[in-house]
Length: 284
Image 1 (spheres, helix red, strand yellow):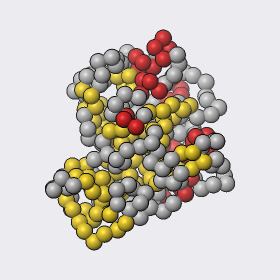
Image 2: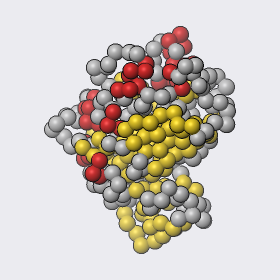
Image 3: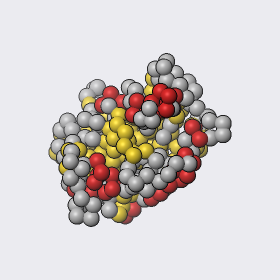
Image 4: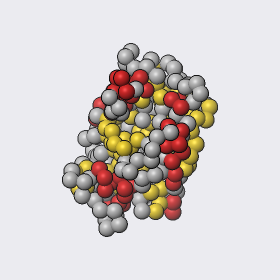
């Protein structure tokens, strides 16, 4: 598919109306006057002649059918967890209520301990996809665009006694999946030359209270977009609006010595070049 936008921002304007607009490359979006699109979902927008001022940047998706996370998908992260290289993508899910905006506070339930961050490149499905075949199908026919995400995790609920070695529960609490600040199409000027087979080669950085914790390039992914689409769509449909969090690099709190868990009030910033930055405060 070829979306009509390059950098799609969903925002509240001065009148309190929720709009979609074409975001500039500026890092500070609030206060910018931007061209707006008609429509209420990102994959079904039309151009208009209107403009509006951004008062508040919202999550670029109003809702999702599901969020898929890919575990152990950066080579450096696999090295730090000291586990065998997986033969297939490691999959877990986050429910729709995990979705959060790029600058929202993340309230943490009192049962959640050992809080961690995971900076991730997100791929947004724009066309229903089933039985994708790597090397035969073009992933960009199904990818609406890319965004920045944080796979917020309570490592307490990921430990085997509590989880039975399942990842999903630890990552499925409300607002544990902030994404944004925009959705960038594959044709956007700042990333189109970095994409090969649907995989952008971009720098990803995660900071906690201004301290760099993760830095990598997305080219360090073990399984690329085509591998993930083939695995996730095998015998089942990926619905448009689905978010795929493609994995996190090394440098998460759990594998620091000693672990440096997030505390209440900590601010996590995740930035991917050519896309933008999300910034969320953890409230425990």
